[in-house]
Amino acid sequence: MPNPAAHADRLVAYPDLRLDTLIRLRWLAVIGQSFAVLGVHFGFGFVLPVVPCLLAIGASAALNIGLRLVFPVTHRLRGLPAALLLGYDVVQLAALLFLTGGLENPFAILFLAPVMISATALPPFTTATLALAAAACATLLGFFHLPLPWPGGDPIEMPFLYVAGIWIALMLAMAFIGTYAWRVSEESRALSQALAATEIVLAREQHLSALDGLAAAAAHELGTPLATIALVAKELERALVPGPHDEDMTLLREQVARCRDILKKLTSLDEEGAPFDSMEMAHLIEDVVAPHRNFGVELAVTFRGEGPEPRWRRNPSVLYGLGNIVENAVDFASARVEITARWSQAQVEITVEDDGPGFASDVMARLGEPYMSRREADRPATMEGGGLGLGFFIAKTLLERSGARLSLGNRAAPATGARVTVVWPIERFDAAAARLAGGAGRPASAAAAPDSA
Image (cartoon, rainbow, N blue to C red; front, side, top):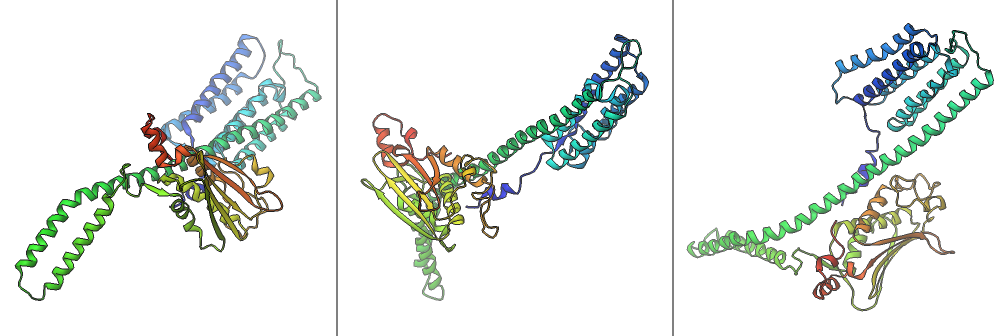
């Protein structure tokens, strides 16, 4: 089965920033700045350069109108255009602050707004560049600005130590809050993309299940025309005199018989009603292990259990999940991977162990998260695999949906390597146990094992 995680890794990208969102936010800024300037001057009687301030505010309004006329509402920005628009907001705010007291003006805190928007929607380099531009503007405003508006028109000079404190607080706020906003949005993006990749796996699983039903339906539907073909072929063979067509008629009769045998196999279903619906533990493990036998790593499979070997309902999502665990073990193993299947009256357990470096201590707590770092940070670059953890996230999600419980860790010393254990309750795994539970008054569908997602 193709690995959708590998495809999703290539899709990791920052979403486009909607232009309409920036326009609406800028209109809020225009309204707020207008009320602040007019209110302070006419309402409180503070003396400030009203006309230059209104011109700076009017430039933002004109920009919004121009963008609305040129671009449709659904237009989205990516990269440099979005950064330039946010950079304009920084410069426009710096111009207003220059006219109204510089960093002495408490509205200097608004330098954080463009940086926060960039941190949540744009790449880190763009956000860092924007933050540096805001820091440069704030630094210049600390030394060059018009007097802070004050009642009576008398200028007031704040102590330099106070201005320096405002500058330091602004720098720390941009660094801390910007990093926090970027980290939260980055995790949200990674989780969304990982869930999208999981949906790809589930859609493929549903497609495979649909193919099972389609094969059974096709077998029933093709039975009647195939019987007609067989009858006509027999009549033609009787009617034709011996000649050069005898070999063709014999071949036709043999191929019809072969088609009937194939259809008979497809229609030989158990009660569950899907071809190859039930399989033994050995067949399950072989389906998982077979694609990884030719990679120079020994795969040792062991079976231990109480009573008869359990059977399970074929589930592509579980095959994918176990296959991903085995694939990771083969990628990191030095020479050998051990797969142990155990079963009892209560549960079914599958353990995958390798002789590689094992899970790093700083990674252990984050295992199962999407887009995490590889198992060992110092893993040789020549080794394939590793990835960002999306494949394991999908595998863990699919296995847990089937009712399994995963435990992860390292092998006990002196052995090295990782150990992954997957455990199902027997009623979620054994098809016979599920049917018995259904006959005892419990719906069989509730105990079917493992459920298709």
